[in-house]
Length: 247
Ligand SMILES: *Cc1c(COP(=O)(O)O)cnc(C)c1O
Image (cartoon, rainbow, N blue to C red):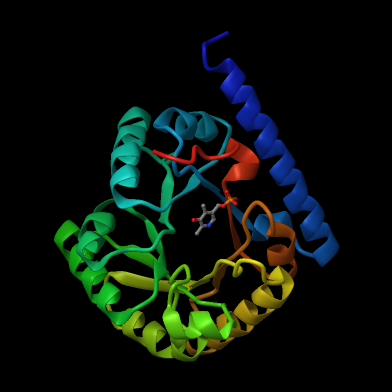
């Protein structure tokens, strides 16, 4: 038994619980679990956890900070080598324009695109790195008046502006528009938030038929996300445990 067996057991147990929750939520919603991709959010946790999760069958991972993600996944990819069994890295954090080129060099999906300048920067980065990127538009679902005015929230484009941003992504040859992403606003009813996201997602899909992903739902609200048609869930804490508060 190797030294990391206890951690492996912990991760396997967390993963098992989350997969059971997804299966139950799908059964309630009359959906197939195969329609839902579980992205395990490994921010703040080491590359060794990513490798254990990969060994447990996880292929999709989420990270939210450029430097941490770049270093960790360079290590992960070096350990795994080239091959069909690699990881898919989803960048899910707020992204500064000056970091976009770097992220474009290693991420497979950028889920947090929320403004035209970021679209140009990612497209430039994709050309420099000679890679294709899948893109989701992060939608701001906050309906409280102070946040709409102040923009102190977690980022995201207002629902009224999603269509225009979608068109800006769709004309870029190395960016592929895949759909929308959102975080339920703090304190809000996730069912109401994800119902709204679903409307936005349907609107985008009518204009861009290939953009059929809806990334929603985290440890605390994945059932609501499944009920409203999420195709991708982003789950950290329920699998890896509490994140260290400082890093
Ligand atoms: C951290 C994070 C998650 C995972 O949240 P948990 O509550 O730990 O499951 C999901 N989405 C985004 C955008 C995140 O930053």
